[in-house]
Image (cartoon, rainbow, N blue to C red; front, side, top):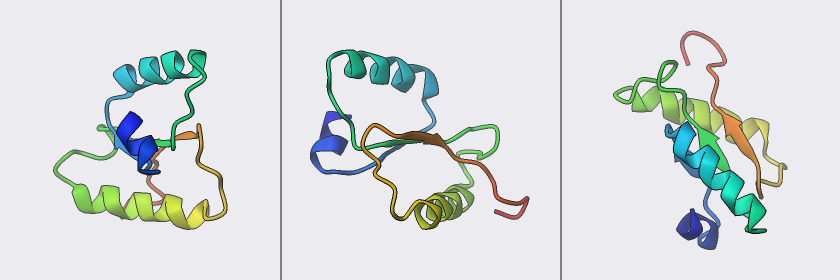
Length: 82
C-alpha cells in the first residue's frame, strides 16, 4: 500500500478482508492512499484476467475526473459479456 501510494498507483486486489483492515488502520494513522479497486473473485475468477482488465478500463473511463485519494471501489460487471 505504501509503495502504490508513493508511486501514485491504485492498488487492485481481491483480498478484501486484509486490505479493508489495513485501510482502517491507515485512516486512523492519517495516512492517505492512492486508491483501491477490489475485485470480487466470485464475479471475476482469477483466471479471467481479460474480464478484470475490461472492468478496470470501464472504471477508468467512468471516473476520469475522480480524485482517487482514499477512494475504494469494487469492480462490477457492466453486462454479462464484460
